[in-house]
Length: 395
Ligand code: ASP
Image 1 (cartoon, helix red, strand yellow):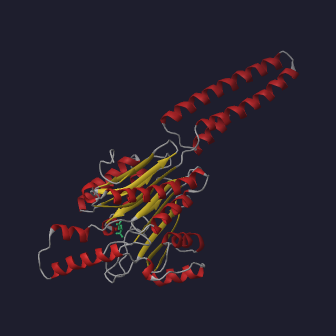
Image 2 (cartoon, rainbow, N blue to C red):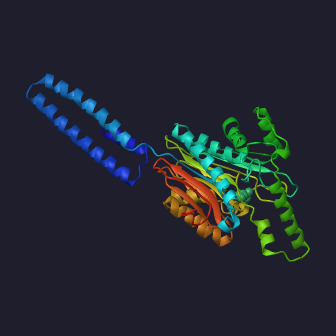
């Protein structure tokens, strides 16, 4: 029985209330077991072997029933957390219709990922499903509707990581891949490599039977307009012409990567991130998203993280891995580790943005030092939350 108890404790990661309930179950089980053993030896002592056999069978039945009941008392938690980018996201800048549309897009991605987990699917499939949906949604900066580089192209980066293993796959600077997260997954599953870039990554996509799409597929009028604005600010700066604060801000605050982290019933963590990067970026610029440890990281030993913000800061500070390292080596809680990295370390260097993170106990962190962050979380304790602003309780 103690073996059952121990392996069960290792397999699931109950929260405080569940742990107390489990302890009571196991206490009762131990008491029943010991009492039955005593009766059995007493039966032997009194030379009643038949009675002893009956008690042995009853013991086995009781053990099976009790451990099944204990397992039912605290099923392994499942959870998914998503983000749709960080930046200047505030009520004053958002019409009710736009806000409703963002919330609907986030909710669809969150629920698509959660459905996978609820049906017993893997965390890898859950994060892939959530990110794919946001890649297809033109209001987010990933896949269709991604921001445009200086040359007017959507140049896409994506990464996925499996906390079991751990294993990882990523692609950078691809121009014709409809869902870069699916290609990142293929790199992980079907190649010995971790990161493929540009033409090489697209050749690999073709080899894997993936259809490529024309560059126009990604371009939207809204992103073309943003690029024009950013180019204008850049030209004015180069010429030494003063720009209005609003114009400068509109050119600089085009953040909006998408990402997801998930925990499945088997206790495995996964992380996925996908982006068009930054508006008006130089052709060939690669951000933190596809760099394992910078914008994306997952390891069952610590946590799963997906970041969004100005990638150069995330790369220099190895943000996603840093969160997990603080959990693993300094034994900080997930919330403490995320706070330390986002509110202390990133802020110190001027890095703006946020991260979402999840650990094997199902703890969730969504923290940012920017004005707002599109985000959502859902878990098997009944939490289902979509948020955008810093104080989103009333929205
Ligand atoms: N982190 C992304 C990048 O720098 C951009 C973003 O999150 O908005 O490529």
